[in-house]
Each structure stands twice: as structure tokens, then as C-alpha cells.
Length: 337
Image (cartoon, rainbow, N blue to C red; front, side):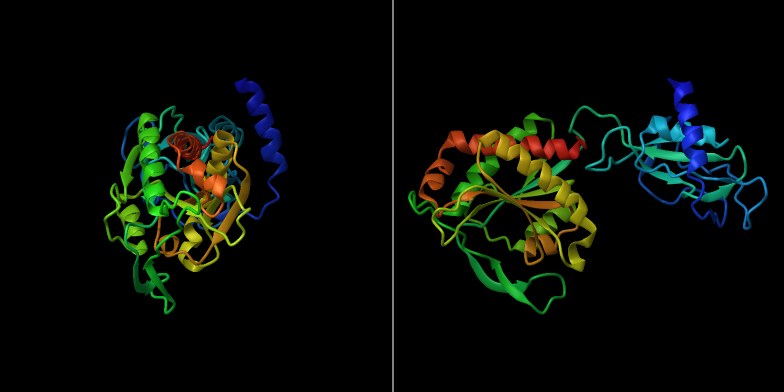
């Protein structure tokens, strides 16, 4: 297997050297990042001799990020370089185990033959125990209609916490249903080994959306899951919608990861409940998203304006299906599956 990988790597690497090389500007330590070597040692100094100008015998560093660790090692060896592997710590959410997440020196840098290339890859983990998920049950017992900026520094303002919907048939307010689902989700995630934090565990609170986001930021949550229920003037509307932050500078850094999480969760919830998927929706107008620096999603678990779905969401059995589906999707995202 190793021989065939080396042969493949030699052919692939040789065929892909048309990219314009860049010359590494200096030799020195790895850039500061939270990674640990596979052998447990501290930060290393790469042994590559990196020249300010390209030499005749210099070797171009291949592109390794996104490839499996086996293929990356084969590419490095085929290029006549040496390799040191390191395990990402903390892990990179949404990345498949065994895939390279960073490299040093950078792709296309010119280094001396035999120089050391440091590859950091996602650990092959079988448990979600190292992840933190913040669950935010939408709304609260009393709306807070005082205004806050829709995002940091914005002149546009909206209510700190809106009132939410009420079941057209059950007359149960959204804030009660979201908490019931969220508590079941908490238990489902804990059972899978995830560390869970809750924005609230009771209804009589007053926590603005900006503060809810801040809880996740402070905790460095790997994912924030906000539980909501929908409403519509069309009483026939029903199904699951999953929202993610998109479309403004505040959320640019978390959009890609959030969308990955939304895709995983939406698919898992639909599979668990049999509900109709109304798809994903990127949003730029949600304070809870705009103040967040952590990947975040909102799961709209059904329409309280639809009598049949309102009654269904009020049952403990269906709430459990929703919770189990969300938990499955969350763990799938966290483990990069």
C-alpha cells in the first residue's frame, strides 16, 4: 500500500508543479496555533532551509491541506522532503478525521531537498467528549421589547427578545415548547458524550439575544444550537427549516462552518421525524447570529400556526424525535462525518 501511494504521489506531484512557486521568507518556528505534536513535544522549529531566493535544487512544497494524512505523507516523501505529523488540538469542527488541516511551510514554498514539512491533521476520534455545544431555547416568558443594535456597532436596532409564536390549537407559547425540546436535546447530547451548556433552563429569565451569543463566545462553544418554532399567515405551512448566519461582515468568519452544521442537522432531523424539509436559509438579520463568533444554527422545529403540527410538537414523543435528530446531526457535524 505504501509503495502504491508513493508511486501515485510521485505522478500526481510531478504533474501539478505548474503552479507559480513562492519563496518562503525565513526559517523559524511554526506560526502560533493550538496544535500539539503527535509525540507530545512542544512547538518545534522546522529544519527546512528556506532561502530568500530560489535555488537551482530547491523543492516546491506540495499542497497538503484537505488531503488524507496518508496521501499527504506520500506526497512529501515523493518530493524528496521529510515529514513530521502533528494532531490538531483542539480539533477542527466539521473536518473529517484523518484529513490535513494545516501545513508548514506553506504550499508552493521553495525549500531545500530533505527539508522537514510539518503536517497537522484531524485526530481520528470516535467520541464527541471533547466538544462543547451551547443550546439556546428560543424566547422567554416575558418579551423584552427594549432595543439593541442588530449587530456590534450597528445603527439598526431591534427588540432584545421578541415574544415568539403561540400554538393555534394548543395555545402553548413558543418559549415553553422550545425549552421542552432543548432539555431533551441536552440529555441526548450528554448521552453521546458532548459537554452541553444551556442559555436557560427555566422560562422566567431576561437574556437579550446579544447576551445569548456572548455566552457561546465566552465558552468557546464548538456549535451553538438555537431552538425555535415557526409561524405563518399560511396555516397550511409545515415542516423543518434550519437557519445559519450569512450575508454580512459580522458573520463572515462563521458562515461556512455554520452552513455545514445546518446541513447535517437538517438532514438528521428530517430523517428522525419524517417531517418535510423546507431547506436551509442564510440570515443576516438575526442578532443572535450577528453577535456570535462561534458556528451557530437555528432549528425551526415546526409551525405553531399549523394546527396539526402544533399538536404534534406538543407531544413528548415528537419532542424526543426532534431532540434525537438534532443530536445526531450535531455529532455528525462535530466529528466531520
